[in-house]
Image 1 (cartoon, helix red, strand yellow):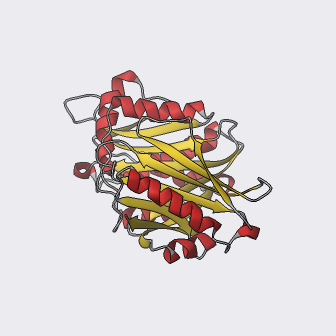
Image 2 (cartoon, helix red, strand yellow):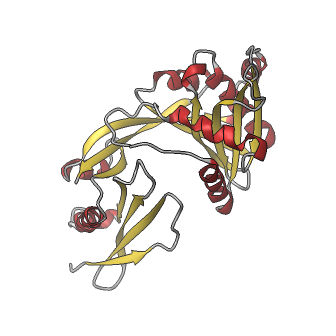
Image 3 (cartoon, rainbow, N blue to C red):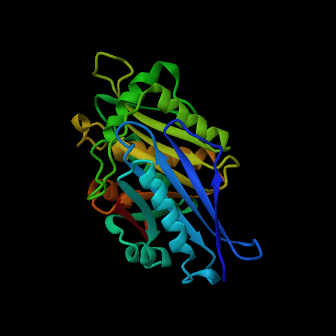
Amino acid sequence: MPIRITPLTDPDRGTSSYRLAWLASDADAIPVGSAFLRLFTTEGQAHRAELDINVHPTERRTRIGSRLFDAAAAAARDNGRRCLAAQAEDGSPGDRFLAAHGFRRVLGLTYAQLTLNKADLTALSAVVDTPHPGYRLESWYGTVPDHLAQSFADSRRAMDDMPMDDADYGTVTWDVARVRAAARTIAERGDLLHTVVAVDTSAPSPNSIVGFTELVVPGDGKGEAQHYGTGVLPEHRGHGLGHWMKAESVLRARHDHPDLGTLITDTADSNTPMRRVNDSLGYEPTHKVLYYELTL
């Protein structure tokens, strides 16, 4: 069966990346597969591209995926990328496809969920109400308030040493403009960004943020909400701040969105401290996703 691969243009160019796309169609112009290649543009990650390939189940094992891969890999090379990354659920056709095309496994991510109407609210409240001398919690929806913006951007370095095993992830540099752009992107697609932060009350600045956790809630307050990131600056670890912030995030989600079903989080298998936090809050593992990379 003749297959045509058509390059497409994605009009949405972000501040830190943009996408290339290809559509595979059969002799009757019926789509049978697609590929998207995200090219990162910020300093520290401009060596990377991320690949997402999808082929209709009935059309697999006919080299459609391979042809899409060839087109995307060539584009990544032409754009000067040395690392091509992709994800697949453990044991899935995508898992086998990536392994067969020379990718190597570099990171395992375990997904877990918390069903809100089964959450132990008493236990969560006890965590939130436990004093943490020298710290206080603050939170907001949407874009960070102006008086906290610079400190919040500075606190993002808490993610610089997150466990990434063998992944060539590079570095991400955050400033106020990038923080606000990320919040704006979430709002433009109709979702709600809720952020909880830990503030160091002993610091010279009254707004010294030393940790954060983010939760993205569907705009209608229903279905699944996704945790985006939780981090504590290295010099403030060991005080239970991650546990404290995440418990507050769960309680606020339960209170503010009574129709919300579940909270979803993903954590690197090697990130033992955060996995312990999730377990203690009642999150239950659902599946594993494998992170792959190919050196171009």
